[in-house]
Image 1 (cartoon, rainbow, N blue to C red):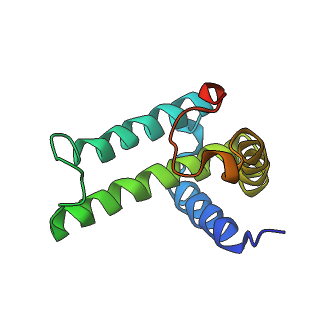
Image 2 (cartoon, rainbow, N blue to C red):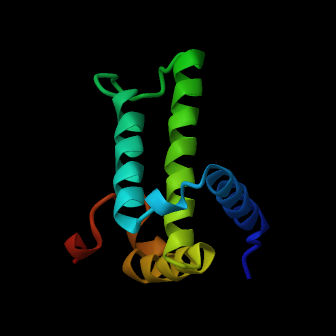
Length: 117
């Protein structure tokens, strides 16, 4: 069993923010998915042209933190609008991934599951 209290608290925080502004009318699944993707691209922008991305200044790390927060807000909101149990979906997907990528077989190897012999 997974503790979902943090995620439920985030969902409540985002819901309250949206409700206070009467923005639910704009939060269609399409709009939320697009917004999440745009924010993810803004995360990537901070890493463009860097050798690894580990060399970020503290200011850049803070900017990345804000963009990651935006991605998470839209993800949580999209799951809420679609009535998706996000912790349950994550647990289910991890079970699927464990089958596709057994640790004893793939450790240290980053190939896709269908590339293993």
